[in-house]
Structure formats: structure tokens, C-alpha cells
Image (cartoon, rainbow, N blue to C red; front, side, top):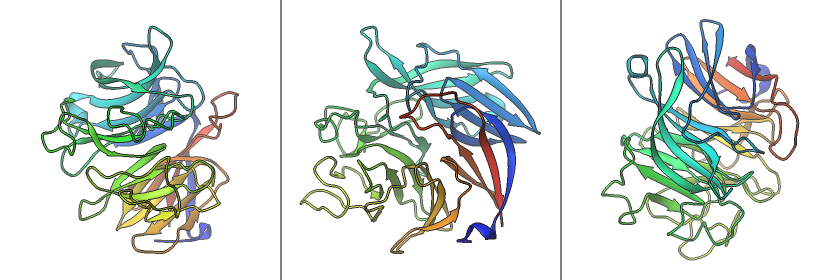
Length: 324
């Protein structure tokens, strides 16, 4: 794993993206979500943008919107995917939902709601979804700035959830009848597994103290009672944290048991070899890195350069191909 920017070649694959959030590979290219509710296909150099036909309008305010994406293994034939997006209830409450959707070659439409009513916020929604090596779907949710919710096992906020592909609660989840896999999270947005099937998650700290955690079933990761080097009985400490600095980690990926961290505030791609004592900067192009996808001998990175705390247009975000 190279650890200096000069070791890498950077190619701009597209500069026509608008607040992209997640990227997955398909034959000949990629599928990406965009915050405003669009799904982008970039195949053989051609970019096509489709508005998701959804059961509720996608609400893109701050950092909310269309976020997580997972594709079926037979996506080329079935067009099936899982999506996570923000919406408003009839009373105006900010919420998130997990849905299935299908692409028929001409349009994207929602096909089923697997879980809705997930508490939402302008900034803190989690939003990453990924299938684990056990075949179950994992979903991250944000704390919504309510300090009571991450520790509340009756709330879905500030959690990592686990479910079957059709939205059922697995019998071996740690809390009977609950989607909750782990709790006490602030705003987790990165999920990955190592070669032994061990799960890791990255989450945003309050001001610094961004964390990389080893996730185990039923464990409490302490927010808001502890962060960084704090400790308390019954609460898990991170394997590494950002200290006074901030990474703002949006996504992680695993390559040869090295955790790659796509960092927004740090404007860098960071590497953390498991069991190491610190992260190393792999690359910086002075852009906010939203997601990272290892594919073949390359890394693909998408940027979202508007901060969710600021206003302005969503335009000019990029897909970069990074090779040694």
C-alpha cells in the first residue's frame, strides 16, 4: 500500500457529479447515488442520470438526501438494489427509510419499503448500507443531535442495524425482536469487513475524535457518554481515533487488511493497517472524499465538495481513478 500522494496517478473519470454519496461497480462502469435523489450510471464513458421514483419525495437538505446503495449480486439481470434516503413525515418530521428499488434499463423505481421512520436530521443520518459476509444487510443511522437516543434500545437512532435482504429481523440479532446490532454511535458512515469477516465502522466525532471501531454484536460504543480516550465499564473504546484533529470519515474500504478511509474534512484518503498505531495519508487532491471503491489495481473515489453545513449548488463533484 503506497503511503504518499506522489506514488499515485490520478485520472478524472467524471467531473459532472452533484453531491454523490455512494458508488458501486457494474459491468462496464459504475452506479452512484446523488443527494438530490438521482441515481447516476457511468458506463463506457457515458453518464446517464435517473430520478428515483420513490414513495416519498427525497429531501436533500444539508447532508440528508439519497445516500446508501447496495446492489444485488445479479444486478445485471434483476436490476435490484437497496437504497437509504431522507424524507419528511406528514407532520414534517425528518426521517429516513430503507427501500428496495429496481432499474429496468430506462428508469429507477422504488419497489418496497423495508424499514421507515428512522429518525433523521439535517446533518446526522448515518446512511451507509452494505451486505456483510454473512449475507445480512447492515445499515448505519445517526444520533440526530438527541443525546438520549444512541443509548436507547427502543430507538433506531445512533445505531448499526442488521436485517435480512427482505427486511426481516434475524433470529440471532443480539436484542430479541430488534434490528439493532450495535449502539452508542454518533454518526457512523463507514462499514467494512476484514479477511476474517470482522466488522469495522468509522464514525464522525463531535469536534475531532472521529473513530474507527471494531464492531461486535450487542456492544455499546459509548456516545454520548464517552469519546476518544474516555473509557467506561460496558462501553467499547475505538481502535483508533483522530484526537483533536478531524477526519470526518464518510466511508471505509478494506484492502489486504488495510482500512482505507475516505475523509471529508481532512480532504484526504487515509490508510490504517490493522494493528498499527496511526493513519497515513495516501492521497489528497484538496477535495472532500465521500466514498472509496477498490477495484482491480485501482481505487475509485467520489467527491462531495459542498459541506452539508453550507449552502450553494451541487455541481462539479468528481469521480477519480487512482493507480500506482
